[in-house]
Image 1: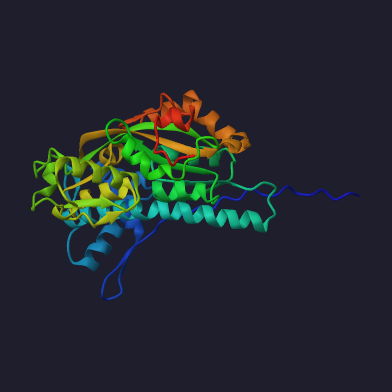
Image 2: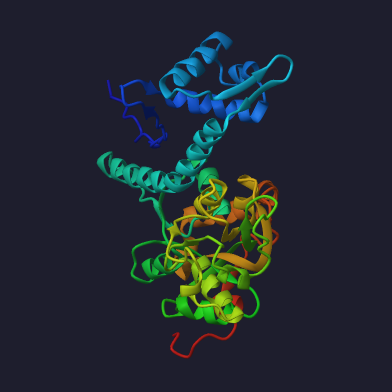
Length: 370
């Protein structure tokens, strides 16, 4: 009897970020407590938080008491008929979790993607994954999640816009994600990528339009209203990494305002994503940063718009025929995906999936571009 062969399995690496605390005497404070405190902050009640966390009230209260005994300070303020409120320390624990996730989450996604690729090679998968190197963004995050859930193999690496475009030029990826502001800074910032563009061989896929602006602490206690305010000595700033599109934009905004990087307290303090910048500010470690509106809203920050920008994928003309890229373009153009993107504050997906020539996207480019 002929033996049936199983098809090659489609593996997905699932990463989960878990952390905890340990007191000097060895008592451990588990991550489960952090999740519980987060639920209390959301629902305003330990009973409701316990139900949301799929645990009993008795167990939830035991976790809180165990942690309070280990730390020697209270974590909840509870009053009959008034629910529960986090103490300042508990609030710091919740914010610490959000900041850790904002900073490490994209790195875990990149690592998981790399491991998936190696496992596929070991299993002799029939087709190579689509290699996507991109500046981190919420629309990209949503797109990759959608395509992965549909069974598409994607080798994802989050990196700066400049690095992503350079990787495509060097043949290290199939798709490169980067962003460019509209208006007065478009040409000068596009020029920082343009050495890697090829007018004949490259095409540009429009992903989204989104807003960049100053993210400040709720209520704006430092009275920060414009880029020039970053030069005030009492204002603490948090930046993005060198080579990122946001840092390129910041440098142009500073130059226009007559402010030098040396005048900005915290210019060298860099985070790798918009969410990590927002978490840094929300944790009280800085007063302001430049980032996208979605990140500000998710961390309960005020947002002062500065620029509108377009996020693109750069691909080779031949790559457009790749089945995975065709599926990606179809997803971008779907009403369902555009509706989901439209829920992100500051995002506009009206042109998502549109394919452009390099010249159509950016107009005139430096003369050395082929």
